Length: 108
Image 1: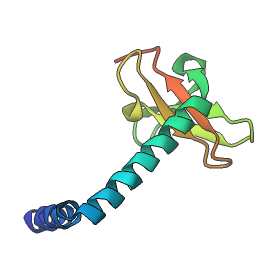
Image 2: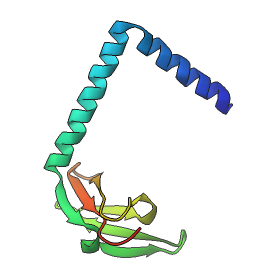
Image 3: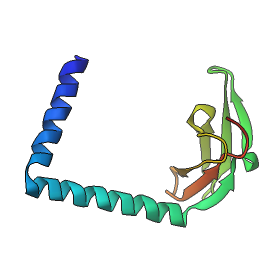
Image 4: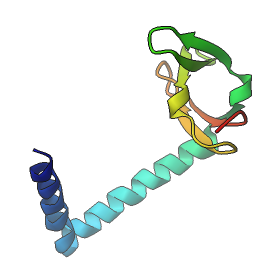
């Protein structure tokens, strides 16, 4: 049930945040996660969406943007995963975990 799941998540958050020790541990974990993401952003290779090869999936009738990583693995970015125009997003290669910062220079 959705309302029971929501209640459990809220109860769990309350249990974590009401005690100083668990709240501090949560804050530290969140801070480390944000640092890791920022580090990935800084190290990511920038590419523009317009540089990627465009494919089409006949089954879903969606466009997919394809980029070949330096390791040879193909990155696939589906059209519905793309943010607004002039925004960038991070994506990782599943073959080597190299990060790319993809700039949407096409649409939306």
